[in-house]
Image (cartoon, rainbow, N blue to C red):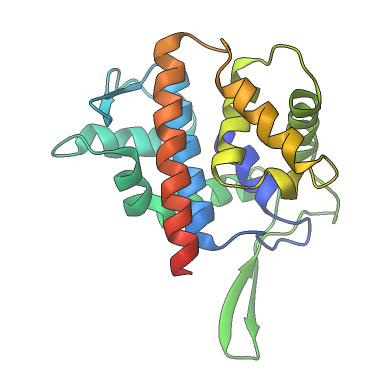
Length: 217
């Protein structure tokens, strides 16, 4: 299965393998996406604004299950933003490694000015991966349309908006339209209330964390 984190990473990387955001901002977004995946799967909930494991059963998705294991082993519950700060590097690496293993992107090691190491993740053929094309199409349909949005697409909209990437994903859609539609979707009945509330709290944490990470970049 393609996870929300897979989709977010692909949306934030160019086909040449360069990220459109700083690594900390991307990492916060990826960790937020993995947390959201666990909420949708019924593995975690937010209690008093802290992440609590309700079912430790693995989902079958390596990056998602790695986070689930970390949460289950924690000495105490923590807020989403604390997990984002703690795991943003690890989360991004796991998701990118998974995409490389599946052949969606490839890893290229190089050095800038022959000194500074850098890693790119271009697509194998230089074209947009089918997984990314599908995510973009779903986002466009959701944000340009007026009808109901399915659970996973609504969650992806929330993540893209929280990471402030909506204008980069859909640069041809007016800013005011994107802002209004994102708000409309977030307030809609796209999932049970408990799930929506948990995702909303993750979204708030991601927005705050991404802003701090961007300011410190």
